[in-house]
Structures are given as C-alpha cells and as structure tokens.
Image (cartoon, rainbow, N blue to C red; front, top):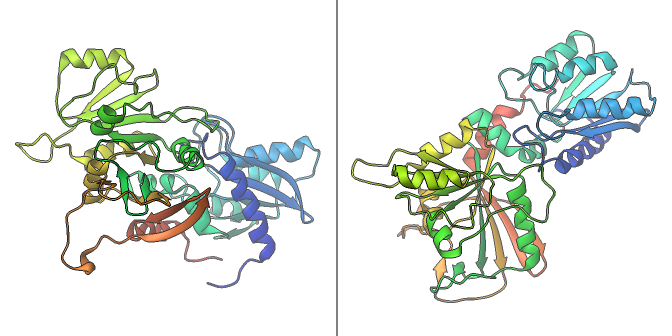
Length: 385
C-alpha cells in the first residue's frame, strides 16, 4: 500500500478511535464513531456518537469547536467512519462538514451501508476538500465489527464468552462453576455484555444456574436483549431472567397458555423452524437471521457446552472470548461439545487477535479468519487516493 499518510494522521486517528471506544456501550444499533478536528497541529474539537437518536460524532466535534469559538475553515477533520449523507434520526453529517469548510477530511473506513458507501467521499471531493481514506482501517473495523458484519453479511457478529481452567473445564459434573475465574475477569466480561445488542444463552443454563444476565459495572443507555434457545419450551416464567427487561425466547413449541405467562413477564416468544421434520431442534441459522433483521450487531453468548457446540457446528461462532484461570480441575465438563477427530488437519482452527493478563487470569480472543477477511475486504477501499 502506498504511503499516503504520515504519523500525525495515525496519531489523530488514534485519538478519534479512543473517543469511539468511549461510546461503544451506548451507540447501539448505530456504529460508535469518534471525530477529532485539528488546526495548526492542535485539537480544537472532538466528539463521539451519542445514544440512539442523538448527535453523531462529527456534529458533536463541530459543536465542541464552535463552542470554544474556533474557526473551522481550513481545519483537518479525522473521523473513524465515513460520514453519513442521508436523513435518518439526524440530518446528514456530510452537510455539516461542508458548512465547516475544512481543508481535509481523513476517514478510517468506508461505511458499507448502501445509502452511504462512498457517496459522502464523492460529495466532499466535489467541492475541493481533500479526502484520505484507510487510516487505521483494521482497528476501526474491529471497533464496530458487529455493525460491519450485519450490513455486509446480513448476520450479527457472534462472540462466545467462556471461563475455563487450563485443562479446558468450565464446570464440575455437579454443575458447580462459581467461580473459576477472578472477579476482575468477571467484571471484564460485563464490558462485552454491555457492547452487545443481545446476550444469548440456552435453556440448560437457565435451569441449572438461573442467571439474571444483566449488565453491571458499566454505564449503559439500555440493557441488551436477553435471548434464550429453548427448543421444547421448558422455560419457567418465574426464572430470574424475567426482571422487566426484554427477554426473547426462541422455541419450536406453541403453547398458548404458557405464552401468556411469558408475555406477562415482558417476554417474547419467537417460533422458529426446526432442523428436520421429526425434530424439535431449533434452526440456529433462523435465529441469527432474526438478530440481524432486528438490528442486533453483536450477539454475546454465555452458554454451556451443548449450545456452544451447536453454534460451532452451525458455523455461528465468529469470535471466542476465553478467560483461562491458572488452575487444573481434572475430570469435569468441557466448555464445548464437539465430535472427536482422527486427524489434526480436521481440527477447527481460529486466528488469535489478542491476549491480555487480567489479575491472575489470561484473556484470549480468537476469531474466524474467513468471516473477518470477508468483512475487511468489503470495507477497505483498494484505491487509497
């Protein structure tokens, strides 16, 4: 790739990315965007996406600069996603940029939404504004990976969170699992809940653990949808999961009397087709389609080995968030049920994104390279001019 930008571009875009991260838990279903306005090598304005229906990052940054009485004309604007050029909950951001008369606009990555997708760049260039694209592009894609996944592939990005021992055990045979990892690891897990549109689990986890599955420890504008895979509709309407927030139950069984009890608890029953004619096993592809159609960008899975294995078999795990505690448990339940293989070449392979020490635990993120590469290729503009 030609060297069309310098270190100062990377520095200011990294500042914009930090701003975008600060809004990741409140922006859903919109992507979280950061914007920095620079003039004479000095930041004169900055902003990030507000909660749904609120101002976008570019408008926040412009207002920040104008509130300090800076002159915007001739500035350079750094933004982590191509500005919108259509009317939605807010007016087009590109119009606000045009009024500011910047010298340059530096964009991390194109917006793959068909109503945008390069149009804002054309508008800016048509009036003589210099536009650079592709600064810190991969980092910007990872930041909003769910948004890009939904828009490009019509599927959410599915991230499975797992707490495990060094020997891959997630619970004892007597179902006890509290706690394998540290309190700091468990708090970190709440961040990933907070940035998701839905928390998905299976009926086995509901019956055995009776969890609440809410976000704690992080400020959020809304609780994610709580979603349950319940093939044969075994859910008890008195379960802790029903706390007034939205609960969606995917099942193949239509029980009108039970439906009413669930609806009274703010639950929603989604009847899903089964895998086969004589089976009550839910078609997980239909579940993923429902998530995408309902603007769920990221699905955060906290489930037992059974559902984890089914999701993997269905090619519905895009990322695994693994918290390893430095303990050995021995004979106990594994974190995922998968068939045995005879050749190592048949192993399910992931790519490693990062590893991080959290207290005495290690968090490792691995991802489906093919899914990531498909999304990346659709986002990154080949012509960087």
